[in-house]
Length: 77
Image (cartoon, rainbow, N blue to C red; front, side):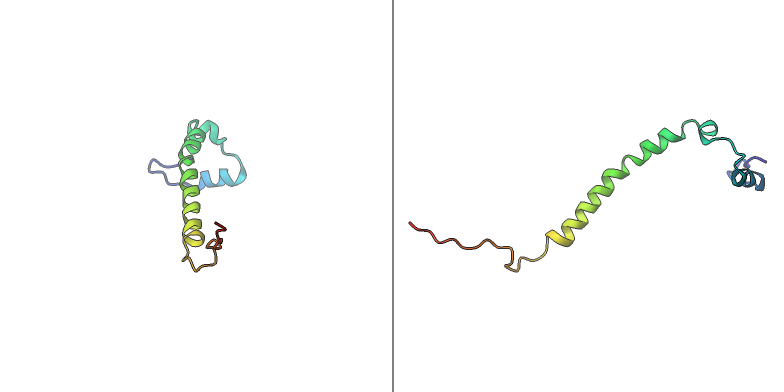
């Protein structure tokens, strides 16, 4: 059995999938792999920018309580 026209799986296709009798995805959907790669590429910079923003918000933008201020140096002039 094949998937119906509205995209629903039929019991025959699920059985083929479980038994490993379905065709490889490269033959059924030849353009899927490049589409997945190019669709996931924009997610990488978004995740990296989000991680950097969370790090900055949680650890770098805390109140200056004097612990990290530079020590006063006495001038000899």
